[in-house]
Image (cartoon, rainbow over all chains, first blue to last red; front, top):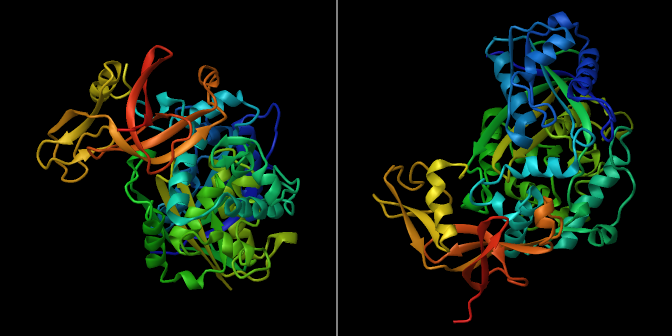
Length: 380
Length: 124
């Protein structure tokens, strides 16, 4: 099979985009990605898009294609919660590898912040819970993750102070990105003192709700040098609902990562950049630890040692992650991969962390339900 | 109306102040939530049984930011996942202060036209 490369990326700023809808935001990000890839619209023969809770259209991909004036040979949308972006990248790679498509545009965007009332957004998201057994209790996504956190912290000794370290790191990274939603500096103390949401999670342990869009182009053509190949991918889906989680040492992240590493022929030690989903601080801690980038219960120790700083051996989410760059749904989960691509391509501007060669990207959807791992490799 | 027609026995149980769970007729494994097949052996002959209502707290949180107006009246409220003595795990409300490892007993309360479970420390 032929290789697949990331040929370009584009994004809108994240934050408030009063008066703009999902298609407006998607078109801006997609236009930037095409410009970045140096591709005309006519060269796009595949389009994958996510979903928008503010625009629950039956055919979002072709609705977008018409408005954006592209006529691909292959198109559909895909839904896998926070893992949607990762799954679209994985599928785009397969479409290119199989020869079905040559240039696949992946795009998602949503006015999740300004397009609906906050309660409406929170209730829509809460429906990832079981409709008969969980949701009727007045549970929400933060409550699901708080329950998950309580058990994980009980088993591992991870503390609220530990979690605050991750929030502070994401905020200091976001401060260096012109398009990030939240840039005001925070400290461990301010995280710990922030408003309680669902114990042990406080406001600053939770990602914000944002407006924004992201797009990527996956191509059979390597594009400009250095090129960035999609070297491996893997998924795992072990449960949907929080109460059905059987094993707190393997939510599925480890399985997905093992599949991606196996396919790429690379090992954990080959990775020099991390792009890890961080809907909550606990999400980031669990994923880092389960995949093996920190010992169980030890992710904060690596933060304190400076290992995940932009200047450290394993920079983590240098755009600021969902926790501070922002979260507008599918596009929020694409932000990690977009930044990983830019770091490997040497196109991260002021945030460039030297030469980065191998990135590990991981996304989860639901309540650690759906996992997608990707390995990006720079080829000079 | 249950979201899942075959989860109706669970919701009917709640209305009668009973905790019902699914059990595989073939291998006897109890399971959490409602499924069309046994998670252990894949068999599709499943029955609903009624639990005693005793269990151990597996996870707990205090929800300060309620997701809707009706639940705002209750906030802050404690939610827990309890491992029932029969094996399945169940999410429910819980008495303030319950912690992981605590022995609890199920009680029931009416809320917004439905019954919900609330776990209280079991002093027996």
